[in-house]
Length: 230
Image 1 (cartoon, rainbow, N blue to C red):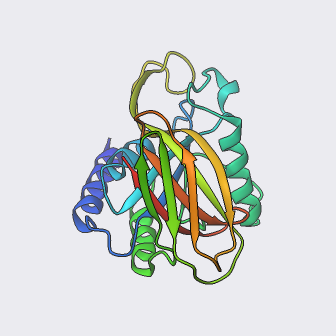
Image 2: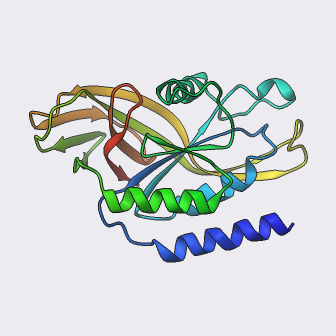
């Protein structure tokens, strides 16, 4: 109970101190699982982060805990592969939950709010080198960015469900009703960009769920720009 109260206190401080975006949104990816007993505090923290305008908070549910008694209803092997790609890029030998990847480069245990707070603040001060513009027209979205320094970048379109509560019946979290925020439902590469010419892309994005665009150095490198339509 003491650790839970401490977590809530830190999350409240986190929300109160850094409420305004200065240099573009910081992308936070939480790798989590309904079958992970240490994940609920990180899931709760992401729920608070999802309310902010200075970050884009995304929950990617992995499938490698499904074997211990409860199959995560949001899990995808693609998100597990993305987490492994981050591990390879960082020369790490293992993956774990809950893990937050911030800005595509910093890996933090997702249940450590003070560390998360410090890293997000550092990324906010540094800012995104690419200013991404995102607009919607009907069922399509339009992505643009000015020409800048050269590089090899992937432009990714992410959709998510803002909130859903799940009754966990088996596994490590059996008997709990857990609420999850910003649950990623798709993550697609919609283009490549060399950075030297202006970026202009159009993509199909039907439905009312939020749309996120992430411009990232290939492969699983730093995130250089991002935008969101909620």
